[in-house]
Image (cartoon, rainbow, N blue to C red; front, side, top):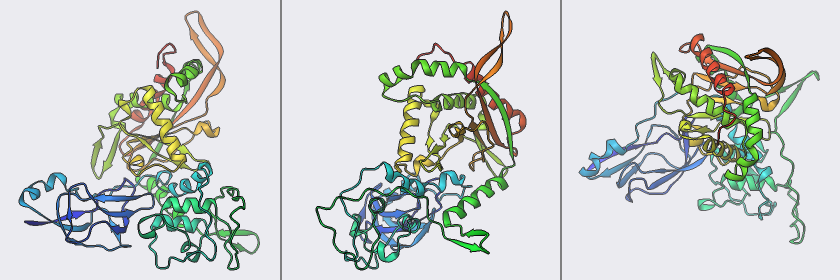
Length: 451
């Protein structure tokens, strides 16, 4: 028999620690490989952690409520000799700290959670009243506490929220349902008659901020934790990567004409709407195959060339905030597959149904700023990636058209492509040729192609 350590596995690219919610197994219990042994919470998701291998759980090193760093030893399991020989294959290696992605991916999940309420049908549960049972000394995950803080829910009020989790624990869904139907709680509140109609959900408001006046001429707003993280990561990305931007204007007329021609048939045959995003991502994937040194990251003096092409796409939430889910192995999808994946991730983002895996391991990112009416921009790189591209609005413009009979002036559908890249490892030649190649694929789009 041997005593081996089990470490906290990686929970997502931007997650460096988590909080123990509860242990599902206790010392002395038999555990099987991949069997869940504890539940943990992060600022993004609550999830269960599986055992790395089979054996007897001899010791747990953390208790409920403790914060655990990714890669830390969390338990010790006694295994047989045969099971020990398999440990290297099953035991997750301690995670190495990586530069975290920009705050657009890491900081918007909480806002997405709150905003998703506007699209969710109202639950049957009513808002707890002042005489509801009080669940004192109950554990609350960081995500639940963040929602409570953003919504101005006091600890006293939080202790009255009914929980549907283990041992009455309040889950994220409990909080979203409660906030949607929340009414002001007063000490003298009286029970609401059963026949009274349920109140209409209050309109979603931006996160509450506390302001103080300075001589009546200006206000001072204290940053909350999320905003501090946004500021830190934006500065870090600029400090890590010397940003350079290249711009190209592409003639999108063939793409616009083809989409207008097939979008109705596309929806009938596939059940999916056809936006420009999957077409743009298809061109990005083709260009990455032509220039694989754009699909890299930097580790000290080493350049890591990624074989997988995982394209992150910025999704606008109802608040105007952005979150960046990732299409993993985007090169393995045809246009129909990309359209389905784009629509699926966009809908799940707006409904706050993304998982940590959906936001991790991106190797290149795109942002369609044209949806905001912007012509071009200089996006900030998501660390540890080395490049990001923004697509501007498609605008009708007079342009020179070259024909065998001579040059003509015509109305064309034009779009700017903005490419920001890390000048440590991507020089102007590679960065400029890459964005030009993406534009070439769009301009040479086959207007007679099938799906």
